[in-house]
View 1: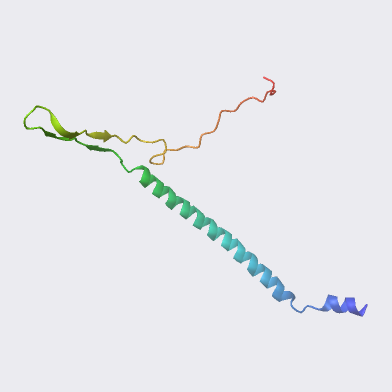
View 2: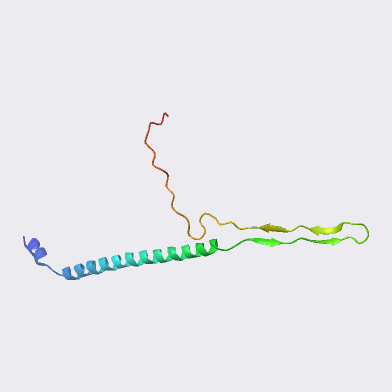
Length: 111
């Protein structure tokens, strides 16, 4: 019985352990909140970068050129011009929406 009563009356380290558990809990909660805010900030910046990349106009055009022959009629060399018009994509300028399928009735798979 002396061992049990000594164990019950022994308070050595009790306050320190409780304080450490409380401090560790507060630190972990603060760390979770801080990391969540960092995640949101990084996602927002990546979204800004993707919007800026989507807004880049990639259209181009250039004219052809040629060199005419001196004696007989015609061309000795020529190149043709080209052009490309950049169309707006589905997700350019933050226009993407998460698309979900329409709800469908559950039926047997034999149909």
